[in-house]
Image (cartoon, rainbow, N blue to C red; front, top):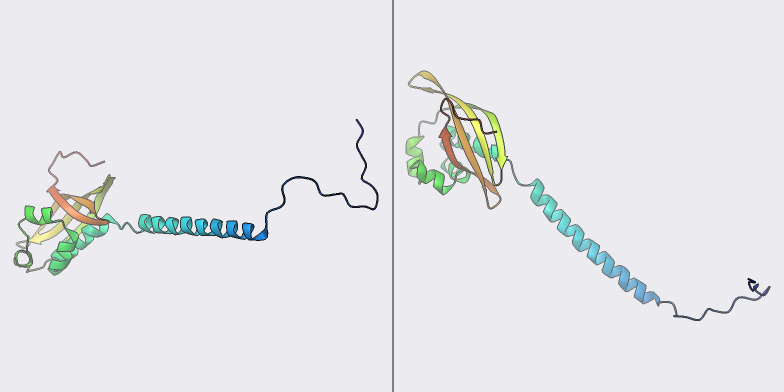
Length: 166
C-alpha cells in the first residue's frame, strides 16, 4: 500500500467536511456550563449548611435544666413541645413560674445517648436537694426533632431493672 506524499513547499488543501463552529457558539456553551455549575454549587452549599446546622439535641436538655434553675418560662417553652407541657400540667408561664419560682439547682450528667430517626434519647442522672436532703434520680429524656429544632417531648423515671437504651 502506497501513501501519497505531501507536495513540498505547498500547504495541504482543506479537507472536505463540516466547517468549524463560530466563536460565539463556544462562548454561549461556556456560559451555560458556568451557570449550571453555579446552580449546583449553590444547592451544595444550602444542603451542606442544613446538614451542619441541625443543632445538638443535648443542648435541649441543657436548656431544660437552665429554665428550671432560672425560672425562665420562654426558655422552657422553646425547649419543650406542647405535648410535654400538657403532660406535666405546665401549659402557661403562670403554671411554670408557680411550680419553679424558688429556682433551685440540679446537677446532672448525661450517662447514655442514642439517636434514632427523628429522636434522641438520653439517660440522665440528676442530683438535687429536697427538704435539705440530697436526692439522686435517673431520668430518660426523649428529644424530638420538629421543623428543624430539637424539643423535649417526654421524660420518664428510670426504675430499677429498666433496660438500657442502647
